[in-house]
Length: 313
Image (cartoon, rainbow, N blue to C red; front, side, top):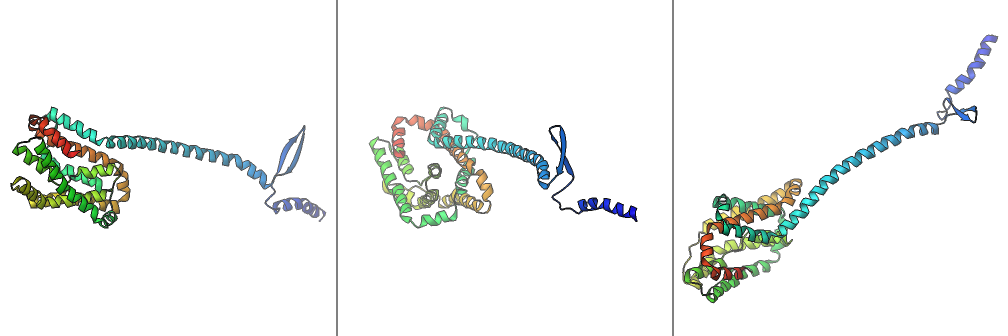
Protein backbone atom coordinates (compact mmCIF):
# COMPACT_ATOMS: atom_id res chain seq x y z
CA UNK A 1 0.00 0.00 0.00
CA UNK A 2 2.81 2.39 0.86
CA UNK A 3 4.45 1.66 -2.48
CA UNK A 4 1.09 2.18 -4.27
CA UNK A 5 0.47 5.49 -2.46
CA UNK A 6 3.98 6.65 -3.23
CA UNK A 7 3.54 5.76 -6.93
CA UNK A 8 0.21 7.60 -7.01
CA UNK A 9 1.80 10.72 -5.59
CA UNK A 10 4.47 10.56 -8.27
CA UNK A 11 1.83 10.20 -11.03
CA UNK A 12 -0.16 13.28 -9.97
CA UNK A 13 2.13 15.84 -11.72
CA UNK A 14 2.10 13.77 -14.90
CA UNK A 15 -1.71 13.51 -14.85
CA UNK A 16 -2.03 17.22 -14.16
CA UNK A 17 0.28 18.02 -17.04
CA UNK A 18 -1.68 15.74 -19.36
CA UNK A 19 -4.99 17.45 -18.58
CA UNK A 20 -3.57 20.97 -18.41
CA UNK A 21 -5.03 23.75 -20.65
CA UNK A 22 -3.75 23.88 -24.24
CA UNK A 23 -1.90 27.16 -23.69
CA UNK A 24 0.92 25.22 -22.04
CA UNK A 25 3.22 22.64 -23.44
CA UNK A 26 6.60 21.16 -22.77
CA UNK A 27 9.10 23.43 -21.06
CA UNK A 28 11.47 25.39 -23.22
CA UNK A 29 15.06 25.89 -22.15
CA UNK A 30 16.52 29.39 -22.36
CA UNK A 31 20.07 30.55 -21.88
CA UNK A 32 20.31 33.23 -19.26
CA UNK A 33 23.94 34.17 -18.96
CA UNK A 34 25.74 30.94 -18.18
CA UNK A 35 22.71 29.42 -16.52
CA UNK A 36 19.88 27.53 -18.07
CA UNK A 37 16.36 28.39 -17.04
CA UNK A 38 13.13 26.79 -18.03
CA UNK A 39 9.58 28.09 -18.40
CA UNK A 40 6.40 26.76 -19.97
CA UNK A 41 5.94 27.31 -23.72
CA UNK A 42 2.64 29.06 -24.34
CA UNK A 43 0.61 29.30 -27.55
CA UNK A 44 2.35 32.57 -28.36
CA UNK A 45 5.60 30.63 -28.62
CA UNK A 46 3.94 28.30 -31.09
CA UNK A 47 2.79 31.29 -33.11
CA UNK A 48 6.31 32.65 -33.06
CA UNK A 49 7.65 29.35 -34.33
CA UNK A 50 5.06 29.21 -37.11
CA UNK A 51 5.50 32.87 -38.08
CA UNK A 52 8.73 32.37 -40.06
CA UNK A 53 7.02 29.67 -42.14
CA UNK A 54 4.01 31.90 -42.76
CA UNK A 55 6.25 34.79 -43.75
CA UNK A 56 8.17 32.54 -46.13
CA UNK A 57 4.96 31.30 -47.75
CA UNK A 58 3.67 34.85 -48.05
CA UNK A 59 6.92 35.99 -49.66
CA UNK A 60 6.77 33.11 -52.12
CA UNK A 61 3.19 34.00 -53.08
CA UNK A 62 4.11 37.65 -53.51
CA UNK A 63 7.03 36.70 -55.74
CA UNK A 64 4.73 34.48 -57.80
CA UNK A 65 2.17 37.27 -58.13
CA UNK A 66 4.90 39.72 -59.06
CA UNK A 67 6.09 37.36 -61.81
CA UNK A 68 2.53 36.99 -63.12
CA UNK A 69 2.06 40.77 -63.01
CA UNK A 70 5.32 41.12 -64.89
CA UNK A 71 4.04 38.85 -67.65
CA UNK A 72 0.73 40.70 -67.79
CA UNK A 73 2.40 44.06 -67.85
CA UNK A 74 4.60 42.94 -70.75
CA UNK A 75 1.55 41.88 -72.73
CA UNK A 76 -0.23 45.07 -71.75
CA UNK A 77 2.73 47.13 -72.86
CA UNK A 78 2.86 45.40 -76.24
CA UNK A 79 -0.87 45.90 -76.74
CA UNK A 80 -0.58 49.53 -75.67
CA UNK A 81 2.16 50.10 -78.25
CA UNK A 82 -0.01 48.48 -80.92
CA UNK A 83 -3.02 50.60 -79.94
CA UNK A 84 -1.05 53.84 -80.13
CA UNK A 85 0.51 52.84 -83.45
CA UNK A 86 -2.85 51.77 -84.90
CA UNK A 87 -4.51 54.99 -83.76
CA UNK A 88 -1.77 57.07 -85.37
CA UNK A 89 -1.87 55.02 -88.56
CA UNK A 90 -5.65 55.17 -88.93
CA UNK A 91 -5.66 58.91 -88.24
CA UNK A 92 -3.36 59.25 -91.27
CA UNK A 93 -5.96 57.46 -93.41
CA UNK A 94 -6.11 60.30 -96.02
CA UNK A 95 -2.34 60.11 -96.42
CA UNK A 96 -2.43 56.35 -97.08
CA UNK A 97 -5.22 56.85 -99.62
CA UNK A 98 -3.19 59.45 -101.51
CA UNK A 99 -0.08 57.26 -101.34
CA UNK A 100 -1.90 54.19 -102.67
CA UNK A 101 -3.47 56.31 -105.41
CA UNK A 102 -0.07 57.66 -106.45
CA UNK A 103 1.32 54.12 -106.65
CA UNK A 104 -1.70 53.02 -108.68
CA UNK A 105 -1.14 55.87 -111.16
CA UNK A 106 2.61 55.32 -111.36
CA UNK A 107 2.53 51.52 -111.59
CA UNK A 108 -1.00 50.17 -112.10
CA UNK A 109 0.18 46.57 -112.28
CA UNK A 110 0.96 46.70 -108.56
CA UNK A 111 -2.72 46.16 -107.80
CA UNK A 112 -3.54 43.66 -110.54
CA UNK A 113 -4.11 41.02 -107.86
CA UNK A 114 -7.00 42.98 -106.36
CA UNK A 115 -9.61 42.57 -109.08
CA UNK A 116 -13.24 43.69 -109.01
CA UNK A 117 -14.18 40.20 -107.83
CA UNK A 118 -12.83 41.15 -104.40
CA UNK A 119 -14.64 44.50 -104.21
CA UNK A 120 -17.82 43.19 -102.62
CA UNK A 121 -15.90 41.20 -100.01
CA UNK A 122 -13.63 44.17 -99.19
CA UNK A 123 -16.60 46.52 -98.85
CA UNK A 124 -18.39 43.97 -96.68
CA UNK A 125 -15.29 43.63 -94.46
CA UNK A 126 -15.16 47.41 -94.15
CA UNK A 127 -18.80 47.65 -93.08
CA UNK A 128 -18.49 44.64 -90.77
CA UNK A 129 -15.63 46.36 -88.99
CA UNK A 130 -18.02 49.27 -88.43
CA UNK A 131 -20.99 47.07 -87.54
CA UNK A 132 -19.32 45.50 -84.51
CA UNK A 133 -19.09 48.96 -82.96
CA UNK A 134 -22.86 49.53 -83.17
CA UNK A 135 -25.99 48.46 -81.33
CA UNK A 136 -29.67 48.64 -82.34
CA UNK A 137 -30.10 51.42 -79.78
CA UNK A 138 -27.67 53.58 -81.77
CA UNK A 139 -30.05 53.51 -84.74
CA UNK A 140 -33.06 54.10 -82.51
CA UNK A 141 -31.42 57.28 -81.25
CA UNK A 142 -30.58 58.40 -84.80
CA UNK A 143 -34.16 57.98 -86.05
CA UNK A 144 -35.25 60.48 -83.42
CA UNK A 145 -33.52 63.20 -85.47
CA UNK A 146 -34.48 62.59 -89.13
CA UNK A 147 -33.60 66.17 -90.06
CA UNK A 148 -29.89 65.24 -90.17
CA UNK A 149 -30.51 62.50 -92.72
CA UNK A 150 -32.77 64.74 -94.80
CA UNK A 151 -30.18 67.52 -94.81
CA UNK A 152 -27.42 65.17 -95.95
CA UNK A 153 -29.70 63.71 -98.64
CA UNK A 154 -30.48 67.19 -99.99
CA UNK A 155 -26.80 68.17 -100.02
CA UNK A 156 -25.84 64.92 -101.74
CA UNK A 157 -28.39 65.30 -104.54
CA UNK A 158 -28.68 69.08 -104.55
CA UNK A 159 -25.42 70.86 -103.82
CA UNK A 160 -23.01 68.22 -105.16
CA UNK A 161 -24.51 67.87 -108.66
CA UNK A 162 -24.81 71.65 -109.01
CA UNK A 163 -21.19 72.11 -107.88
CA UNK A 164 -19.99 69.41 -110.27
CA UNK A 165 -21.84 70.99 -113.20
CA UNK A 166 -20.49 74.45 -112.32
CA UNK A 167 -16.89 73.26 -112.05
CA UNK A 168 -17.17 71.36 -115.32
CA UNK A 169 -18.39 74.45 -117.12
CA UNK A 170 -15.82 76.69 -115.44
CA UNK A 171 -12.92 74.49 -116.59
CA UNK A 172 -14.36 74.10 -120.08
CA UNK A 173 -14.71 70.31 -120.01
CA UNK A 174 -16.05 68.66 -123.12
CA UNK A 175 -19.46 66.99 -123.13
CA UNK A 176 -18.11 63.57 -122.15
CA UNK A 177 -16.04 64.79 -119.20
CA UNK A 178 -18.83 67.14 -118.10
CA UNK A 179 -21.20 64.18 -118.01
CA UNK A 180 -18.68 62.28 -115.92
CA UNK A 181 -18.40 65.19 -113.47
CA UNK A 182 -22.16 65.38 -113.08
CA UNK A 183 -22.37 61.63 -112.53
CA UNK A 184 -19.68 61.80 -109.86
CA UNK A 185 -21.65 64.57 -108.18
CA UNK A 186 -24.95 62.71 -108.45
CA UNK A 187 -24.07 59.44 -106.77
CA UNK A 188 -24.60 58.32 -103.22
CA UNK A 189 -22.20 58.57 -100.31
CA UNK A 190 -19.62 55.81 -100.07
CA UNK A 191 -18.63 53.38 -97.35
CA UNK A 192 -15.37 55.25 -96.76
CA UNK A 193 -17.39 58.03 -95.15
CA UNK A 194 -18.44 55.59 -92.43
CA UNK A 195 -14.82 54.71 -91.75
CA UNK A 196 -13.84 58.38 -91.58
CA UNK A 197 -16.69 58.98 -89.14
CA UNK A 198 -15.48 56.11 -86.95
CA UNK A 199 -11.88 57.32 -86.97
CA UNK A 200 -13.06 60.83 -86.07
CA UNK A 201 -15.15 59.32 -83.24
CA UNK A 202 -18.34 60.63 -84.82
CA UNK A 203 -21.83 59.15 -84.96
CA UNK A 204 -21.26 55.99 -87.01
CA UNK A 205 -24.92 54.95 -86.88
CA UNK A 206 -25.94 58.28 -88.39
CA UNK A 207 -23.29 57.94 -91.09
CA UNK A 208 -24.45 54.41 -91.96
CA UNK A 209 -28.07 55.56 -92.12
CA UNK A 210 -27.08 58.43 -94.41
CA UNK A 211 -25.13 56.09 -96.66
CA UNK A 212 -28.08 53.71 -96.88
CA UNK A 213 -30.54 56.52 -97.61
CA UNK A 214 -28.46 58.04 -100.41
CA UNK A 215 -27.66 54.61 -101.88
CA UNK A 216 -31.32 53.68 -102.16
CA UNK A 217 -32.11 57.21 -103.33
CA UNK A 218 -29.63 56.88 -106.20
CA UNK A 219 -32.07 54.55 -107.95
CA UNK A 220 -34.29 57.56 -108.71
CA UNK A 221 -32.12 60.61 -108.15
CA UNK A 222 -29.15 59.78 -110.41
CA UNK A 223 -31.23 59.26 -113.60
CA UNK A 224 -33.38 62.28 -112.75
CA UNK A 225 -30.40 64.60 -112.27
CA UNK A 226 -28.63 63.42 -115.40
CA UNK A 227 -31.80 63.91 -117.45
CA UNK A 228 -32.36 67.38 -115.97
CA UNK A 229 -28.78 68.66 -116.22
CA UNK A 230 -27.42 66.80 -119.23
CA UNK A 231 -30.54 65.98 -121.20
CA UNK A 232 -29.52 62.33 -121.26
CA UNK A 233 -31.00 59.30 -119.57
CA UNK A 234 -28.53 57.26 -117.61
CA UNK A 235 -29.73 53.72 -117.07
CA UNK A 236 -29.55 52.55 -113.47
CA UNK A 237 -29.72 48.93 -112.40
CA UNK A 238 -32.21 49.29 -109.53
CA UNK A 239 -32.11 45.60 -108.65
CA UNK A 240 -28.33 45.62 -108.70
CA UNK A 241 -28.16 48.65 -106.42
CA UNK A 242 -30.62 47.06 -103.98
CA UNK A 243 -28.65 43.81 -103.97
CA UNK A 244 -25.35 45.64 -103.50
CA UNK A 245 -26.79 47.70 -100.64
CA UNK A 246 -27.83 44.54 -98.83
CA UNK A 247 -24.50 42.81 -99.45
CA UNK A 248 -22.09 45.60 -98.57
CA UNK A 249 -24.08 47.73 -96.11
CA UNK A 250 -27.10 46.19 -94.41
CA UNK A 251 -25.98 42.56 -94.01
CA UNK A 252 -22.49 43.32 -92.61
CA UNK A 253 -23.92 45.91 -90.22
CA UNK A 254 -26.59 43.45 -89.02
CA UNK A 255 -24.02 40.67 -88.55
CA UNK A 256 -21.72 43.04 -86.68
CA UNK A 257 -24.45 44.22 -84.31
CA UNK A 258 -25.56 40.63 -83.70
CA UNK A 259 -22.01 39.62 -82.82
CA UNK A 260 -21.73 42.64 -80.56
CA UNK A 261 -24.86 41.55 -78.67
CA UNK A 262 -24.28 37.81 -78.33
CA UNK A 263 -20.49 37.57 -78.36
CA UNK A 264 -19.31 40.73 -76.60
CA UNK A 265 -16.05 39.18 -75.36
CA UNK A 266 -14.99 38.16 -78.86
CA UNK A 267 -15.99 41.54 -80.25
CA UNK A 268 -14.05 43.31 -77.50
CA UNK A 269 -10.97 41.27 -78.43
CA UNK A 270 -11.12 42.08 -82.16
CA UNK A 271 -12.43 45.63 -81.88
CA UNK A 272 -8.96 47.25 -81.73
CA UNK A 273 -8.18 45.69 -85.11
CA UNK A 274 -11.38 46.92 -86.82
CA UNK A 275 -10.09 50.36 -87.90
CA UNK A 276 -6.95 48.81 -89.39
CA UNK A 277 -9.06 46.36 -91.42
CA UNK A 278 -11.23 49.25 -92.62
CA UNK A 279 -8.28 51.40 -93.66
CA UNK A 280 -6.50 48.57 -95.50
CA UNK A 281 -9.72 47.55 -97.30
CA UNK A 282 -10.47 51.11 -98.39
CA UNK A 283 -6.92 51.79 -99.60
CA UNK A 284 -6.95 48.61 -101.69
CA UNK A 285 -10.36 49.45 -103.13
CA UNK A 286 -9.30 52.97 -104.11
CA UNK A 287 -5.95 51.88 -105.51
CA UNK A 288 -7.45 49.05 -107.56
CA UNK A 289 -10.16 51.30 -109.01
CA UNK A 290 -7.63 54.00 -109.93
CA UNK A 291 -5.19 51.45 -111.39
CA UNK A 292 -7.84 50.19 -113.80
CA UNK A 293 -8.30 53.68 -115.32
CA UNK A 294 -4.85 55.12 -114.68
CA UNK A 295 -4.15 55.84 -118.34
CA UNK A 296 -7.33 57.90 -118.99
CA UNK A 297 -6.82 59.84 -115.73
CA UNK A 298 -3.26 60.77 -116.65
CA UNK A 299 -4.29 61.47 -120.25
CA UNK A 300 -6.96 63.95 -119.18
CA UNK A 301 -4.37 66.06 -117.40
CA UNK A 302 -4.82 68.73 -114.79
CA UNK A 303 -7.81 70.15 -116.63
CA UNK A 304 -9.87 67.27 -115.22
CA UNK A 305 -7.94 66.47 -112.08
CA UNK A 306 -8.24 69.95 -110.53
CA UNK A 307 -12.07 70.24 -110.80
CA UNK A 308 -12.50 66.69 -109.45
CA UNK A 309 -10.21 67.56 -106.54
CA UNK A 310 -12.15 70.77 -105.85
CA UNK A 311 -15.43 68.86 -105.95
CA UNK A 312 -14.30 66.63 -103.07
CA UNK A 313 -12.64 69.22 -100.87
